Image (cartoon, rainbow, N blue to C red; front, top):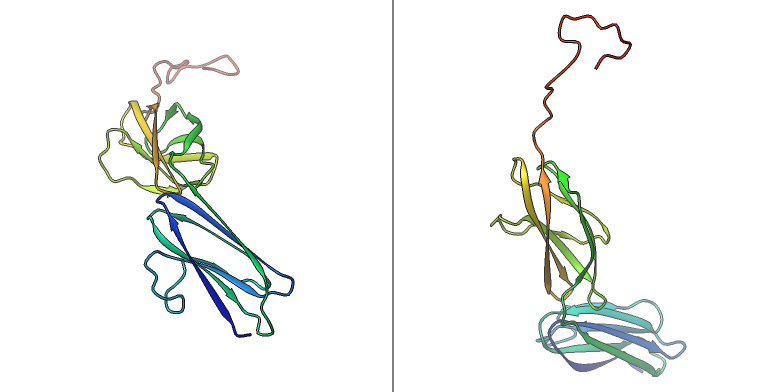
Length: 209
């Protein structure tokens, strides 16, 4: 038969992870597309995510922050006959922020590079990005991609003393959690207060101080 598109409307709440899987009968050539809320035509609007590999096994996933009616399009590309398929949809709402598993600041640092060793997790929507800042700073957050367990660094205001450093992690649906740690900034090089022998003296030891 002709190429066929079947469209399913799905109401999805805010802050959800959506996973759709398509399994066609042997010999089926199919595609799977997820369209945004407000889509007017599957032929002219761009899908949010799509899967159109060869064959009938397709899978798409997306994080939905805005609630609404979304559309799943199952596209059949066979022209000889109709093929059966199974469409599976999982919608899981993420209502809790990510959690810190471990945070280990480098307790003494130069102001040009203050680093925290971080591990965080979010089992539903994952962690998308992280930001570090000096707690007294009012500057906009400088976000960076979260790369998993590792060392994350920033520069702070020069000058010796104790500082509070804050970290924010954002999960896939935009929920943020903050945590703080204290570090000691040391920007002053050491001073020699005693040296022997003094300038102009003679040392009889193999290794003078």
